[in-house]
Image (tube, rainbow, N blue to C red; front, side, top):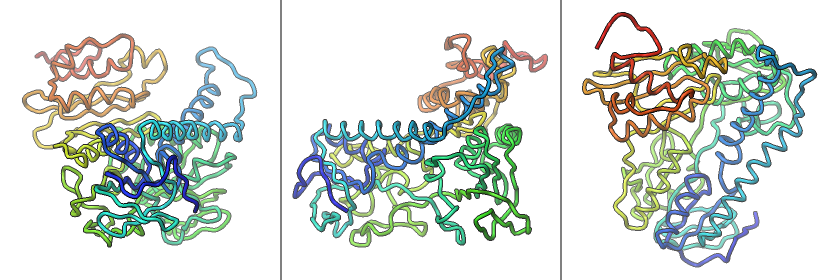
Length: 459
């Protein structure tokens, strides 16, 4: 691989960032803002998996699939479309153009902040030196490992032929007639739903059930919707073999599929980067061990994002990138956030912040069937739950709704600030909006619901 730089390769830098994903480039920019000389090494594309292969592409395609499906089912609103169809090539071109535009934006930001961007691989050869692809060496005072993760491989279903990973599933230039997805996490649900809306016959092969780690109330709605879209969910199933025409299960059932997507999770990208030449310690699963300030056991090296463990979320990596840069610059910083919100872009979406169950926790639920905005848009499939303690301090929120992704940040802020039910209930929310869900459920938890009748109790 040829090394390309946006400047010249320095002999030594204050900070070397290994990995140009969302966590890596954020840490590089923040460190530069703090006056450090920074170099970032990325072997593939700036922005990493999230920007080029995962988060952004999946949400781009989900949006396209939603538009197509909604237009094809708009007669109830008095809208008729004749001959609506998908141009798979143009869809792919748009998906690629979005990632390219963002990648170029990241490179511009790095250049503008005086960061040396080195395209190539980096291998640690000591606690203060890395070797680049062409054999050149780069000395550093501090380094941040931000190499992210990669798809786990299921034995017997290696990525070749008609078996692909989630990245390839989001880069198809044609819409397959049939697809079998091995795995039942959020990636499987998102990919399965989007292709079902585009007309693909989708089968999901689940070891137990879809989204088995999530709230059963929320999962029930998503699962029902997937089945309405024609997705077949094979629960308690184990794939044992495959060929060009499909997958065979342990039960001897055979599932026909043009494409087989193996989406059984992620593993940290820590092998082969020379960590054995440093004092960095990894656990049995390959995750780098860090303290609250994101320092590894090597005093010169920090680590962020997917490589340090769950949850493997881009926004977690972004926040940790900021913290790690400040620690590397000598500031007293720590990754001490109370809550890391999470969103599943299913139909309906599931967004969670904090905890919604546990000792000393009380919950209240408000349905979308009682929300004016949801009724107007015919999007009443969902609810909001709020969890609070005996002092009425908000501990968690779960939103199952259209645009849940845009509402969960209010919940995250409330939890971080130690807000009470009354703080949310007495905050004026614009009407008619989905955001009123937060106010409605807080009022209900206080015993003064307005738009839903829970019974004759008063408070």
